[in-house]
Length: 265
Image (cartoon, rainbow, N blue to C red; front, side, top):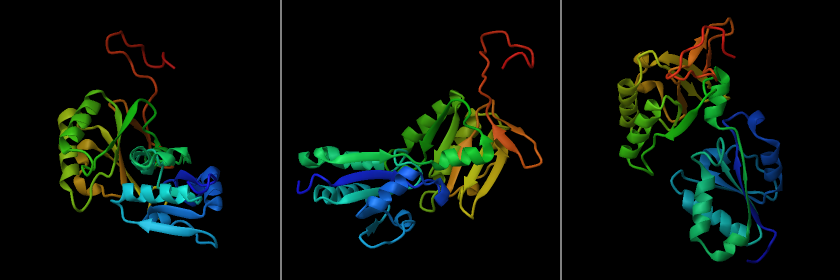
């Protein structure tokens, strides 16, 4: 290792609005000599003297990670950027996979993960609080895992009555995955289960749509959409400002007598 002062920071840029980039991430970017990431995410970084931008395609995460670690080992200050949070279906795992399988000297590098606001959490906040009780997140892409595993997790999450956040629901190359997802939900959930389709959250193209499962169809989602499926307890409050989607924190025990309305917190 040439310079012990090199480092890697794996940063989340949030869902799109610059106001949702954390001060910690802004500070790291101001100190960086190099920024590495997927093309549209690197495009969000302003150019300045002394900073080199390294943009690459979406399916070269391990190569991108090795490049970042190699530059850090040469004494450069490298920020690896992801959208949302880098630890949620993003670059943090890829960097650590490259670290685990790379030269032992890379393990002496300073490597920090800087959290960001995920698209799922931003979408939930825009709509109200649909993730207010137990929830899970599932990546519907079968690029890195088989569809059979995705289907198993979908069914078990629905049977467990979790609220669910879906990432990468429907791409042009594999539109059938979200068709199957809706079919599984229709088999496991009641028809009036509420679903939030949140596209381009915090950007000028933001669109929010809340529908019942019975009214949901595949073309409501694309790769810029986060889908949040409520639990059986999720409900809507009608207000002048628009509907508020939320999941109550209180969940009754089906094995015990239920309190009268207003008796619980």
